[in-house]
Amino acid sequence: MKYLESGIAHLRPLLSGLLAYLFRYLFGLRRVILFLSKVFPIMHFFSISPAFVFRSNSCRLPIVLCVTCLAVVLLAGCKNRDPESAGIIELVDLSAFEPVADNWKIVGAVEVDRSGEKLMSSTPGTGVLFCSPTETEKDNLFTKFEHVDIELEVELMVPVKSNSGLYFQGRYEVQILDSWGVAKLRHADIGGIYQRWDPSRGEGKEGYEGHPPLVNAAKEPGEWQTYRVKFRAPRFDDAGNKTENARFEEVWLNDQLVQKDVEVTGPTRSSHSEDEVPMGALMIQGDHGPVAFRNLSYRLLP
Image 1 (cartoon, rainbow, N blue to C red):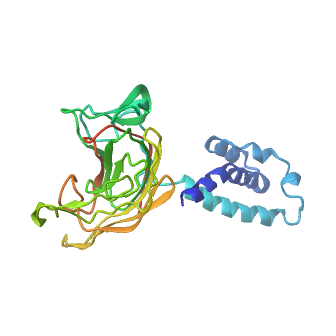
Image 2: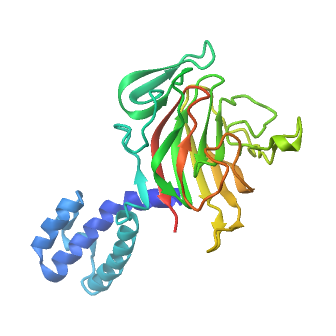
Image 3: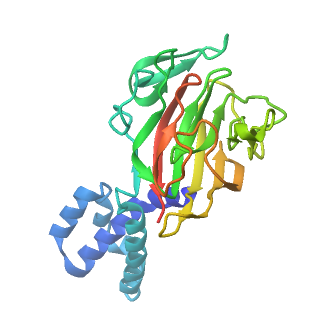
């Protein structure tokens, strides 16, 4: 779906030009064209000679109509999204998140020092979400928006041996870890679905239901990596009883599929809460080590 939308986005200027051409050809509504020129920047296309675009006068109108119908559909699909269901978190400040301790800040760039563990520095600016926890400042970060089913895409960077996690609804974790070069993968490696935890199961048996990634798609510490996650929330009946478990339908790391249709029977370890709810905020773990994020976008699924 990502690549389809990208292709449509690249076609948008041409489709916009065809729409403008139709308005000029059929109606001569220059005011409409002037209005559209404010919406779609590539409007010089309408000034091209009709003989250049459509050589045959006899078939010109049917072609224009057919192409226009396609253009309307595609432009509506990629242009007119509900801002409440899809968005990009503009990392110019922390206004998209709940109030948080000083371990989280917005910066312009980050850099990893590979000479030691968890060494990461930043430079002033905007565009990057940076976490640098200390003994006293180590809050987790919560989005102000809440979600049910969601598709999330984000770029991340971790230094050597650092650790974080993305908790969907604040409860179900996709792991973030420096797993470069790891041969035997565990649920605790990047791309893993972290295990659940129950001390009542007995010593050595507390952890269960962890899911290691299908492949090690990790890049070296200090490189930007990309997560794409499609999450399905648990379902409840009218009385509030859970009828279906949460599920990670797909998890992609650096364009490699690392999880497919993984059911999670309850909150994973270190979740915000042990209860389960129809809707919750996205939580980013902030107490395990430095981590940085950029280009964070999401789509709330119907």
